[in-house]
Image (tube, rainbow, N blue to C red; front, side):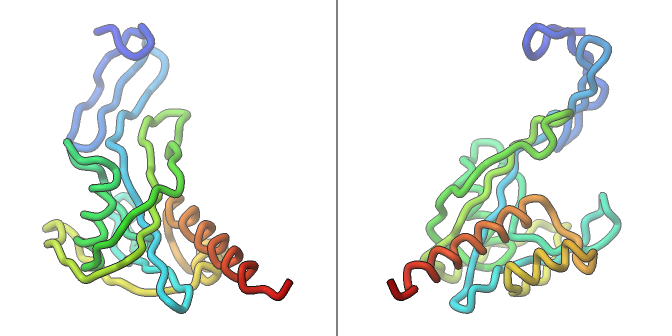
Length: 178
């Protein structure tokens, strides 16, 4: 046992590449998880860029905004641009929209959602274990598919889709007659 976060006695149960499981004060199971990013990209038709890939933890394919873990030494902004280049062959200027914790009751993973603009082609090699298909869908179709179960996605994709709807609403209000 060692002294851990906030003076709690910490027992390391598992220490892997992405996660570390700790038992605090012999009572609370806490997952230490690397932080991650997700990137909202919209085309001129208001459609979101999505990637379809198999997620081993779920045993099925998901539809998500481009996303990934932040590597050691990387800022969240750098990770967002790298993931966009690896998964979609695009680079651009990224702006932080929001950040939140994935599941703060037991996990310290923080998620950063970015908006990418001024896009240009720029491809980095995908990770060896990734098999990704890109597609474009309206935010409304994404949210409807997640709601009715025809799509499987992530919390970051829900948040990105909601930001896309807000952006579209703002643009519509800017162009509305006064």
